[in-house]
Image (cartoon, rainbow, N blue to C red):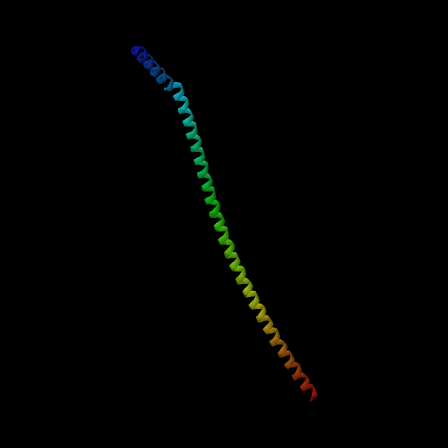
Length: 114
């Protein structure tokens, strides 16, 4: 009886061992799936790196454009300041000319009275 139980136990352990072991075909399938997953991960990594490079290039372009816009705005502000100064000077010259015209007119009138 003990021998029978021992033989049955050994046979069950042997069967369970064989069932639990993976066949070479299954191992190849797992390796193929692993390679596919690895390839997809590599592609995703490459896509992420490409996107990061594109974002960096866009950021550099945007920064350059922003610097150009700031320079243009500064030039425009300088031009506006110069235009305001020129307008003030022109108004002052017009006032001076008007005063000189009034003085000349007054001199003319006084000379005509004599």
